[in-house]
Image (tube, rainbow, N blue to C red; front, side, top):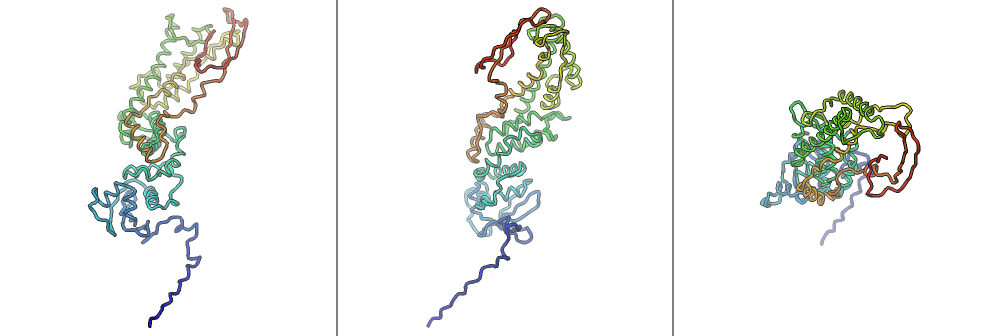
Length: 419
């Protein structure tokens, strides 16, 4: 005769024993054991991840197969390059993440263990840089595909921010790892613009860190050096040429370049501009005009100094409005803007191929064919053109004026014409 045993169902936990939505236990899926020295990431954990870094040491209980699937590098660490190690329980693996913050590692572990609800939708540049460091080190860029584009979105306009000069190298590394060519170009340009020469003759960024100590794509330091020198040379040469042309005009030597737009009292006009320009260039340390090799400051400082130059204009007696010299200039600012806009593309074929590969892995739009920021591309193209025709006397007196307005053709020039 058999005896049947009835199993009595256990009552569920009382509501007050469950973690509340805003409690620390509910904000993280990990289970903390022994006062933060061991953290369980997976209920069926078969491996202990001994993590070391600048923060100290901590143990994570994880799924070895999950990590091996997420990263071939971690697979080799856990099971050997050829899989010679047999999967067993209670495996201990040492992982040294150096200066990288633990938050970045936890983000990747959440993804590897399919705990997507705990993956942040937004990351600071510091945290994003740390995540990129780990995905690069462990070759698991594809792990972040569902989130990478959204993480990068807030930094698309970083080059317009004053803070960019101090962090552009970090954003450049993130762009390099996730394959965003446009962000990379903008950050390298920002770095090129803000780089200066220190007392040792080395290029340093806005925080004084030597560029050779920064983590940059191979060959980019050489590109920054060359582009910086070329751009500064173009700007300084344009200033020097303008001053020489004015000097030739004043001294009776014919110059092909005329800076006076009115044709009336041109010598007085150019002398006035020359004198006011030299005084301000002298204050800015740009007169006599140095050569590019002598200039130690940044392109950004050079541009700022030139944009601050205000030329004095000649004012003749009884001038008609059209004969005013306020439109005359030495074209310092225009030439400077053209030099900066014409800075060479620092990315070469090898860089492009790498970015395509990373973009395919991360899901980020590579923007390979977009050569940087184009926001002001339309500012120089007015929709219509107004032509003014004046008849003047030899003393500058306005005798007659006529105007005609017509649509601006796509192939027409933006240069002002003189009647």
